[in-house]
Length: 303
Image 1: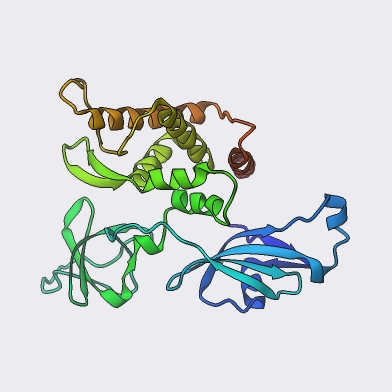
Image 2: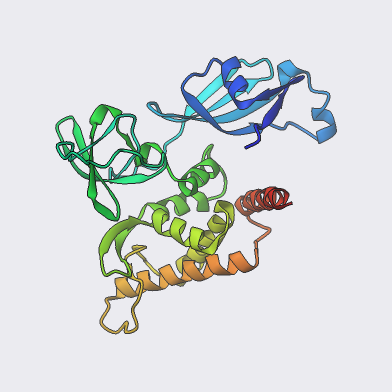
């Protein structure tokens, strides 16, 4: 992956060097923006000491922050971000993961891909007992101190919404979209198993099935939920059954949730075929810019 360079003052710096110059440790740079003050031809003549930049950094142990700094690498302000607070249900690959059935001679080794989500079976005292989804025989233990939970590492979809939601924007639909994404419900899998999922998790699965980017998916989800909101549906998305032919036995809430799921699914499918937008919405302008940049990068990789 190509290391992106940022122009700060007269210097071109990488992400790592930018964090070093700002004396930021143990964090990850997610986004960089230059605060514009006038026409582009004026910005080129702006002296470095008057430049203003903002960056979004993510910490593992502390709240994530927006930082405003000058072209001289002097931090002017720090604003913590109120991240989506999901309940503890998933557990990411930790630094000291050991087999739970360690007494067996041929215990499975803890060779799990770094981004695999492990299901928490129990937390007793200072020990976390985890299993691999779909492989009930693979059981592991981990110290609670080494555990990194999914609520500390939001998904790409949640992260993108949070980026657009903060700093506060005049677009009222961003907070509403976040509120819809936090809703939880019981989802019936094709195997008949009933599991609890958040709307963000269901949307992310639909996005990956359609093969579209996060920005394009957010655009589709937002439009679908707007239509549902104007229709007056009070949904507890995604409380639905995926394969239901007879809706007569369902309650009104279940029926509304069923339609909301399929409306979002249809919107994502249509955006996958043809990207549409509402030019009056400032959020959609930003999302469309992201989509165009992603498409350019995808074409360059293919060529």
